[in-house]
Amino acid sequence: MNKSEFIEALRAKLSALPKEDAQERLHFYREMIEDRMEEGLSEGEAVSAVGNLDEISAEIVAEFSRDKTEEMIREEIETENAKEKKARRHMRAGEIFLLVLGAPLWITILIAVFAVVLSLYVSLWAVIISLWAVGCAVALTSLGCIMAGIGFALGGFTVTSVATFGASLIVAGVSVLLFVLSTAATKCAWFLTKIIFVRCKKSSQRKVKHNG
Image (cartoon, rainbow, N blue to C red):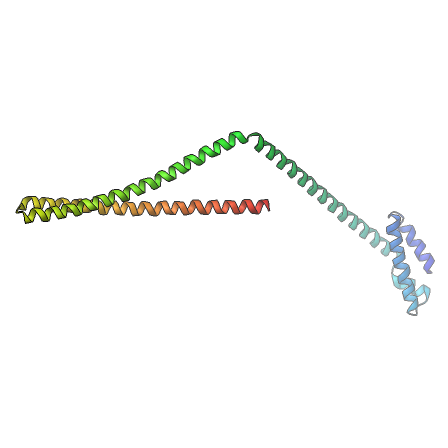
């Protein structure tokens, strides 16, 4: 079989392929035969060196079918991605429309919730400050009782002096208890403040990342 016969036979076997794809394969094998002939082989030997005609045509058809299938899959994936992006755009447009439409309602609710949370937070710190104030007042009362006891002792009022010193110890114990409670409450409030701050910071970072 010479070169022309091989090419024509291969053309007949590739008749099911699109013309451009078939011509590309025929051109490839034509050049391959010519290269073999330039290397010193005869035309018949060059054709034989290319390979079996049936195997070559079967391989070309299988390769074309595989490429065609991959192309179809790619196109299908691209179509699905385009549909998904379009659906997302429509969803975002709908969300924006609903947000704008319901703005008077949700803004009012948001302000109310923020006001309640802020008032609770401020009330918490007000209670803590009150505890510290009461603790300081009780401590000063204890100190006053001690000074009064000293005065009664110097004046010769022994029983009154002892009672005053006893009352000063009780008041001092109450002041210590108040200071312990105030310290614990301050630590809890400060820990809560840190948690709120960290949560708000992370939420802002997620929104910036999502929008970006």
